[in-house]
Image (cartoon, rainbow, N blue to C red):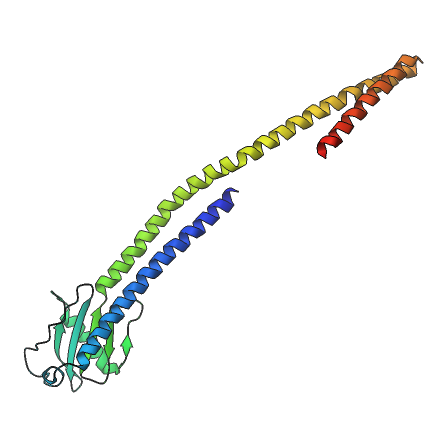
Length: 240
């Protein structure tokens, strides 16, 4: 009973934590995907001096801001990075973003790529225009890993609670069974004692009759046999 309760509650806890992390990951994934989609839509309607005159400095395209993810717009011309625009309040990783953008250009990865948000450092979208949208997954990675570690900590903590609950429930469930088992043991002992008494009288009377052919021993045997018969009949009735 203990192991059944423990396993059921543990499986329930695993399912709950899995659903929590899955929903958290899915929501984060959609948020990153939405950020890329928003930037793609904005880039498609961007003015010509933003899409074509990428040699002009400084590049003015900071009207779109993101608070939950770090987003960059990378302007390219002739397979070279001409400018990087950060759509967040602060950013110190433009050199890394530039290196990553050059790798995308070099590999001709014209697609939208998000990848595994637990491990991938960047997500991006790159199509036929001269713009690459890059999402820095650093904060996303941290949040997801933090949620995963928190879930593992909760799992260990709640496993202790489950162990305590399983022990208490097992004890509560088995109390009637244990009482019934003890009563059955006591009943069997009492019934055996009650049957043993007339049997002893019968055996003793039989031995005495062999030494002394007195009819009183026969009467004792008959009396105790009837008593034993009544006891057995009562046991059979009780069993029914």
